[in-house]
Length: 104
Image 1 (cartoon, rainbow, N blue to C red):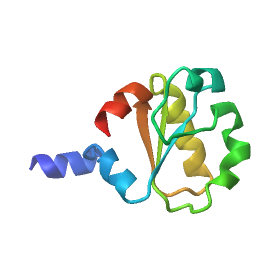
Image 2: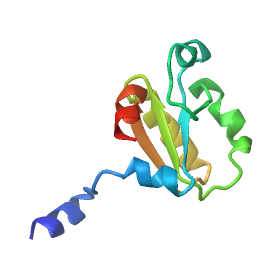
Image 3: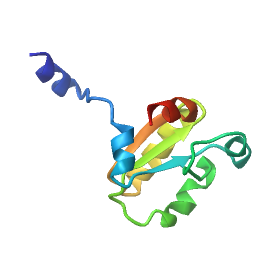
């Protein structure tokens, strides 16, 4: 009964970020270059949010899992929306980079 209610409300289980990375996923950190230089997840790509729309060409495969992150989760949510609108199929908001780093 509860699973049907969750399905009806669109509540999904949290993504397994570790597994997404094992499957070839990438992390896009949308903070500024200065914020990124102050600390980031090893192997993540820095594409500041204000330049994301013009830089999606570096993301070749639109089916590759993409995890967005920032400082708190607000900009990464915007980045997720932008990427989804460009046709990327597997985009996940990882929230703040330091909490995401703990999950992976």
